[in-house]
Image (tube, rainbow, N blue to C red):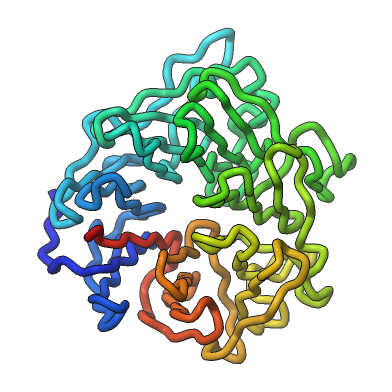
Amino acid sequence: MVTNTAGDRDLTLWIGTKKGAFRLSAGRGRNGFELDGPEFLGHIIHHVVADPRDDRQLLAAAKTGHLGPTVFRSEDGGRNWLEASQPPAFAAPKDGRKADAVDVVYWLTPGHASEAGVWYAGTSPEGLFRSEDGGANWAPVAGWNDHPSWIEWTGDGERANPGGSPLHSILVDPRDAQHLYFATSSGGVFESLDAGANWSLLNDGMMADFLPDPHPEYGYDPHCVIQHPAAPDVLYQQNHCGIYRMHRPEGRWERIGRNMPAEVGDIGFAIVSHPRDPDVAWVFPMDGTDVWPRTPPGHRPAVYRTLDAGGSWQRLDRGLPERAWYTVYRQAMANDDGDPVGVYFGTTCGEVWASFDEGEHWQCLAAHLPDIYSVEVAEARP
């Protein structure tokens, strides 16, 4: 058991890093941020997520030195943590498939507002798991893990990317608990209309310029997919090959990153959207040249914002360093629900940056942390 005694605050940034979890918490008006932690020191924490249905409930996706990949849960706002009784694990293989073991618990998503205690987890290799008791016990989602096309869609769990090929960006339609999305780093974007029993591809319009055929049925590398909370038919995607937007009834991705400045390009990991305006989104571009240095283009860090659904993009760098050699991972950018919206990102150099005016100005909230894998916002309910 891990114990933390920090006091309650109005807004908390939960930060997953290469060497534990930290939190930055602020009082009313997003003032007076204080840093607490680390918790789980020495363990890799890929994701820490607060339950929007009950802000005392938290889950952390961890890769520990002695327990391996697992999930920790807290029922008191992060003061105390317990390991899951049954962490995510693949079922015995069927139809001659090789046995798979979870390498990394990578992504956590709370279930629908109507389903208290339900959570989803994505792993590497690309597994999908569900808990119905607040993260204590996890069961495979057989409709995906045992799908007859799983080997084709995932490359049979081959670890093509550094750290593995994760299943990520698990989305639950706020209008319908049965309607799910997720993405994988070897197949693309997938959709289910029946709570995961069946899955279909949602890749029309995407590019895979690293393949002989840049428009295959599957084989894409989406880095992060988000669904707008107030307009759930609007999806955004930051991909290995561009920035995209979809109006779901049309069912086709539009590459809105074509409108980014040519010298910057539209390659990166993270994307977030305005909580009330589906035409506003932020990205952190990355150098997408052949060597993939994972640094800002020209070593000049900046966030780019669109106000018109990707029709145009504005560079936002006031307060950021003139030169830097870091990147921002897919889970390491977040926003709050404030007015104006607060936008946050964490870097591979261990810095947490914040803007409280929707990106116009930036300030560093914390520095010298381990490599940051994720940043999530938790706001106390009245």
